[in-house]
Length: 381
Image (cartoon, rainbow, N blue to C red; front, side):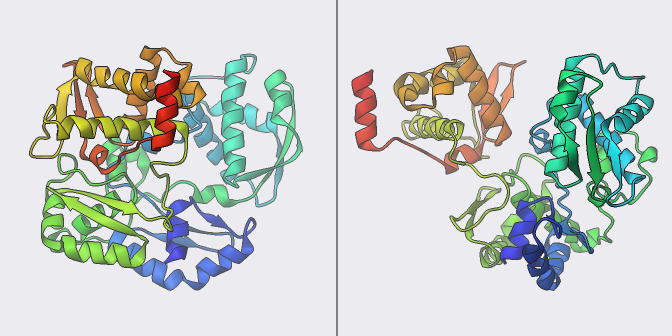
């Protein structure tokens, strides 16, 4: 079902940006709603402006943030922008200074110093992100002028789709007191007794994240795999090009070449190539009985031992890696690889106890250079 796959891949499909695709998805909306409601417990928003599948994860993860944001201030600016646009009509214009005045008046903790380049840069990140998502359009000017000087102006137009950016909460969020409250229900009636909520969680964990690990989340999710794994595999493989791998309570939906749901690993970048080489080295350690997986398929080793392995990979294979990785020091290389592996749920670090836990997904991938390319690398070394 390609139309469903597109909605899983994208935040939304806007009629103003792709009318043909928008109407194609609306033609398939019945099947999409059925899958979303029965399997994911997710809502589908459909109106004259857009079609959107609400993708609320079963287990929120740090990697699910906005990739181009690196500070809390940027998230705060985005929330204030959504508030600002809420009061604007569709196609209503506004200038940048109107928004900066609004930010200064509504920023938690006090005003904002626009004379600081860093603050202006953070705001520009947010505005460019909003424009890329289709929430506003630049009609005249450029954010470069604002980055150069706080008096720089840009003329924007509200598209009206920003009101659908945030999810709909079943309760007033002012009543929430902790982060977990935001994950309490998604507005659909769920019968816990019949296990519908469990089914929704399992499908979400397979389609919205890297995979389902038995040592995280609700323990009954692993039981669902035990009793309904065959039916689950048939359902997913019928709907998408891919294979469901289930082993010892862990499950991963491995996408085929004709399937594109979210970001994938490998993704053709230099860093993903390096991760595949690391995974291959980990596999060698297991096959040589140097490292032994536990009952949950996780491998726990001393952090110093894991980082020694990363140095070995770099020493043996580094000549073929991306130039930006070759320029890093050993310490910088290790931090970069550990960060990426953590992002992809291949690794969990416990720096307090100085241990590294290699997660089962690392065993699902491996990579090596072609034999002729490996020979050239060895010659260079």
